[in-house]
Image 1 (cartoon, rainbow, N blue to C red):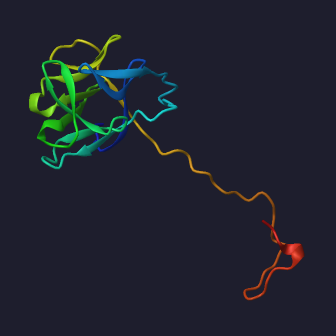
Image 2 (cartoon, rainbow, N blue to C red; image 1 turned 90 degrees about the vertical axis):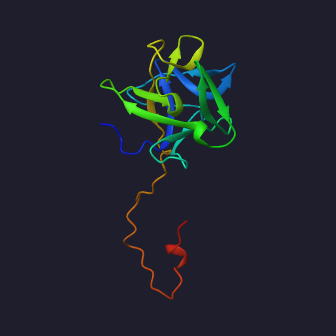
Image 3 (cartoon, one colour; image 1 turned 135 degrees about the vertical axis):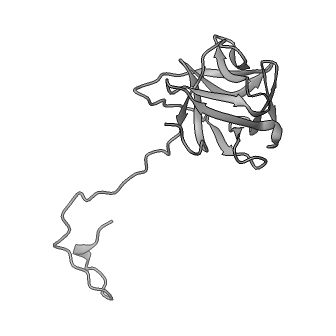
Length: 169
């Protein structure tokens, strides 16, 4: 089911290529990735942050964490960046029946982000390339504490210091 709010940190993946947040010559560059049962592990942070637009809350901005810029309006197939969020950096998201995401430029919503072979990501009005999947970035597992010994024989009364025999680190 399509989320009510697309906000969050994601990795944009098409096949074995993940958009790395770098734009060169109007192409979104990528790194090779491997999908291991729906999980992609990365050594570097190539995530993008999707947030509701401050201009129109029915649309979203895509912040490129790698370059501290926003994915911007497209001209023809080209992808651009902007330093600040504005109406030119708005995007729309929708989900198809295969779980792939249509990431459309809001000002030109017939153009969808797709990965075109070895060149990278661009926005096409046709079916050129592969539509991406969005992988939601999850927080790193936090360390948990667990009891490894029964400490019931130790007693400590409020206001009294534990004895040397009862000290533990």
